[in-house]
Amino acid sequence: MLYSQGLINMSVRPNEIGGHKRNGKNLTLKDQNNIEVVSMQSNISKKLDMKFPPIALIKSDTKPSDAIGPKEAKGGCVMSFIAQTIAKRKTTYFGRENITCGGVSVGFGWGSGLADEDAVDFQSSFLSCGLDSAPNKEAYEKRLGYMKKHTREMFRHGERIFTDFDTAKLNIKNRPVYDEGEYVIFKGLENLDGDEIPQSVIFTVNPIELTVITQINTSFRTKDAYILTPQAAGCQAIGCYVFEQAESDDPKPVLGPIDFAGRSKMKHFIPNEYLTLAMPWKLFLKLEELSETSVLETDLWRKFI
Image 1 (cartoon, rainbow, N blue to C red):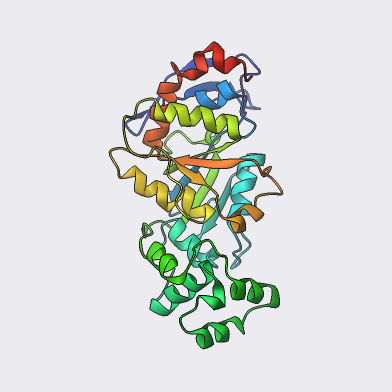
Image 2: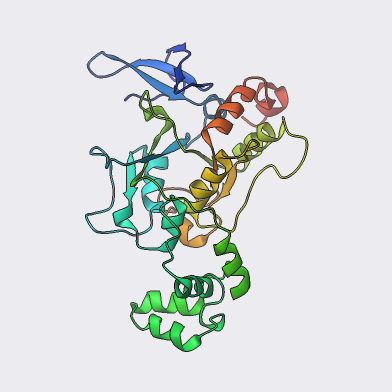
């Protein structure tokens, strides 16, 4: 499917899908066979001339045949695949059979990823101060013995995103857990098929772009927090925490990735100063509508172009 950021003249027409009006623009284009196709474009992305237009996360029970994914029976960190969708506009996927860590399981709504209380304790130790945090140091050290040296040292030192074992465990217990679908598919918003409704829309933003979207997101609110920053893995910040917001009458976007493990898998494709800002489909539609009469229409904003 062809894609443009307003560099060529295209007709614009409204469209409704699944009962949801698409407030972003649907652009009528022609493919290489001169057949008309419809490509969705975000008004926010177009106005900001974003280097990385938004992408969509879609849950599916069917493995896509035309997408990039892990090798058979292999896993790894999903953030490297997501980064390719963001930067290269390639459609990618990840499946239950590719799970190699508990973080991605809960992140994409495939259960908690932790089989029992011992697994929860091990994860709580790792996400805090490693061996120093482990309530049963002998058992923790024994599990490290089965790991490769680099991985073993990382787990011994801990990821240190929580101050202590108890805080880590409470946060793990409070994660939003879902269990449905076999695959997650990532594709550019412009590549959505006519009947696809994303479970999460993901902006990749620099500081100025984040400032604009934050202001649009705040422009209709009167109280409480407006952007969530859960202490979560990158996949969870675009997955399960967004799924949870979709159930709310007052959904909020989720900022990430604030974990350096996830960021390390993206840095080959995405500059370090960029963040993700993910939101449910219904909130995306609302912000798109509000953007038409937002700060993006002011002379003050134009000074930053």
